[in-house]
Length: 142
Image (tube, rainbow, N blue to C red):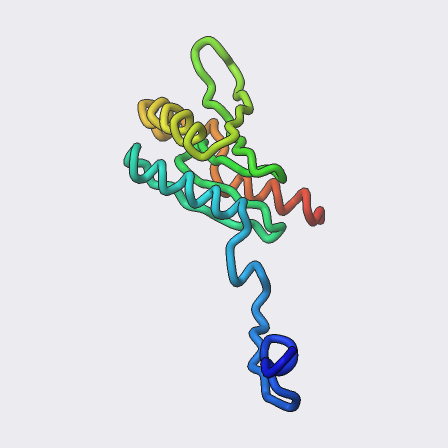
């Protein structure tokens, strides 16, 4: 290396300020980016607030409304439970591959849930706290 010094152009004995942050600190993982993109799409195009949470396991969940919580799997696909309807007496898991597709479908489910009395959702649906509790109990049984 002519005239450039050693690796990265440093001269022998020169002090180096090393950044000790992890790659996760430098840039969020793709799952978190996709979750934040979904939350932004819900807010911008559907006027629906959503919160992105990272569980201690590293898994990402998106809290949209009572009974409407999406999660990302290891392939960064969105999964959530479709609300119970008149023609279906139990919840149904569904998924979407992209944030745009997830936002459109979740917005429809959000409108459906908002039309129901809140007390029925709280009594019968999953809340974010339920999902988190289930996750923690499965990860660290007492």
